[in-house]
Length: 420
Image 1: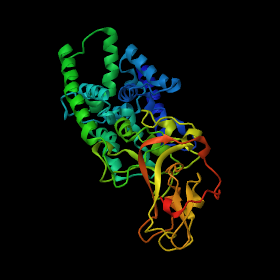
Image 2 (image 1 turned 120 degrees about the horizontal axis):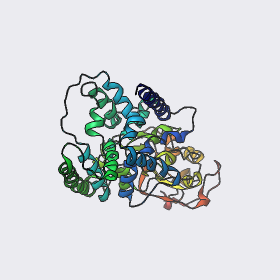
Image 3 (image 1 turned 180 degrees about the vertical axis):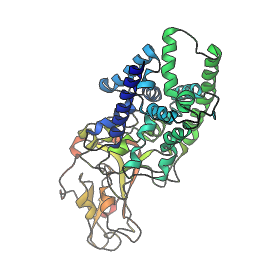
């Protein structure tokens, strides 16, 4: 028995160390950031229900399937041997005061709420997936901390602290993934759960039904996205549209951790809908989306960011630039400035002329990707940046002949009447 316990803890600590390394990144393959979040069958099932499609390919389908197979065989074996969050809670339990601050187990109600809400298209409380919660340490450690990160980011630390009071409070009373795995074993053995039997399970299902469906329907109807924005959010390349991204994103922030230019950040602008709180977005005011990178689309475990090849990513329109004529050095002041055109890797900034015949920038909306390079390099300061990038409601693929070009490419000249 002692040897088994030693082996168990050895494996748990090794996997915990691996999960920390994968989350923090470094001189390792970037896709390792997806390994632990992608182990969750809860994320796979709920996201597939919400999107009405099985979004996982053969390679990434195997991990959650294996976890489910382990659950059918041994119930919560994954929780006791593999889950990095469970290992942290088990460590805190060794020093626990063994007090009771939560007596009612809500994990069943939370699980069924997620499932029923996913049927409506909004997997409520998916933010409570423990593997996504563990992955949220990335923004803090990579210097991308923001106040918006606090609510989802502190779920794991909060329950870790509570674990010093009531041992394993998360695993035994809150975790929806652990409940799901135990449910798989019950289904195989065809036996009711202990302590309450069938009646308790029925109450949990009923609670999920009564909470999940109406709340998800109301959120989708009134508070998932806004009809208009002062500046629409720019979503990572691969997102389908504003609504799907807001609902399916588990806020694991794997995309934040792998972004080489740190343009993907966690923000909380005041004009966002409730369903968009704490979601990762592109902040192009200080940096930009690199045209030779598709990392974020390769690490998302829920399909909120669809997988894109590099060629597909380079043709993905994630936003649109707009020239603010009154702030532009060329349009308003007559100064010869085409800095944005020189920086654009797609040839989306074309040449127009102001009233004095000075060359001035025009945005070709059929070519612009919304990468943010133009806004990033714009030298205007009087009214802020003279070229601003805003997000689009639905991302689209542009023709392949508009992939990146060398700076300085000659573009067609438009008359002043066609100013963007």
